[in-house]
Image 1: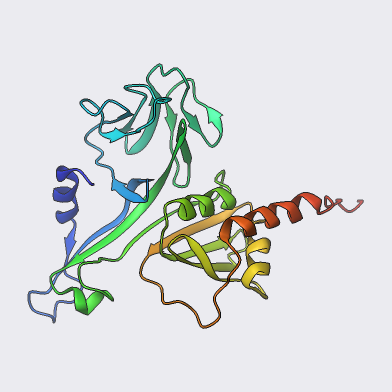
Image 2: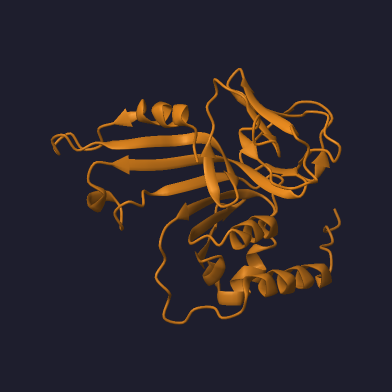
Length: 255
């Protein structure tokens, strides 16, 4: 759950998106730094620190596992940028699969591991409105999305995270040439996929080869497509990784 002071900060960003709709306003948080953890998006407030660990009495974000230290790591903001620092933990703190030894600046899309738990540092957009039916598909469920850059985060890890937290929504990926790929999830399982001229399982296998680009996940209720993908998401990831491993390396042309 987002801290109370984050909600107050969110409301300070109120904008009137349609002046002709008298009194009808939308509360918008745009590109607010946040953590995606355990299926929840936790907006971050730059005026405070966040302690991660397993001690419920002193930590802001609880990592409920014996392998985590009581106070394992902290996230804080300096000069408009967020950093993570290990607090002398036994098992270490990792960013993009590298153990950190000193405070490290975070970029949207960075994968944080407080063993054994994974978190994503993302940019978060969320909307609240006086009359939900005018702006969202289902009352009481505001539109919520998070985004980041694929500079170090692997697509397979992102998909695994959405699968393990049983997310429903649309994952849009742009490769380094800004070509879009789209995956639709229903309770953590990919039910529709398209990338370039490929669809269904073949699209999933192809997009796993994307190394650079950006991503955006919109959490929303998804209607089951007429012909949903029946292959399990983890099975598709395993097959896609197998195909990538067996693909011969590209040889640069002679100059």
